[in-house]
Length: 109
Image 1: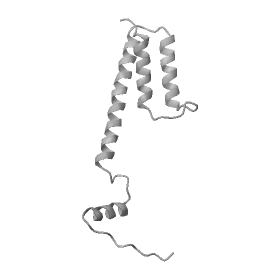
Image 2: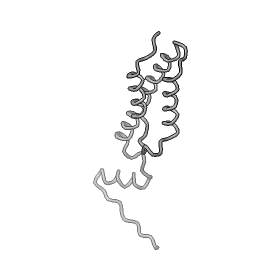
Image 3: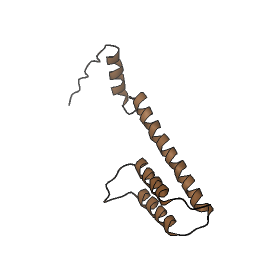
Image 4: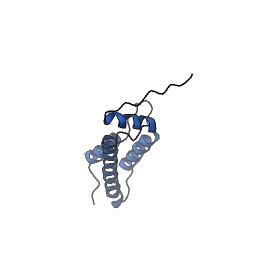
């Protein structure tokens, strides 16, 4: 099999970076550094004919997985808004939803 086109490899590299959390360019994460070195070494070295194709397929599969995970987290946050709240806040908002206000607790401070 022929090696993948440089534009395809560049596109995969950019897609991978898009799916990772954003950080400033001055301090890239170790994962970004590893991905960059991996892509640089694969483009510079001449390896066997099956390896580049397998690496491309693995990268495409990882990109699909990362997109699905990002979408899952987005949907989870959208449809479970009380997930990150503490118990008191959740009870207060539930009471307000049905038209009640909880009494303000007085604490001696």
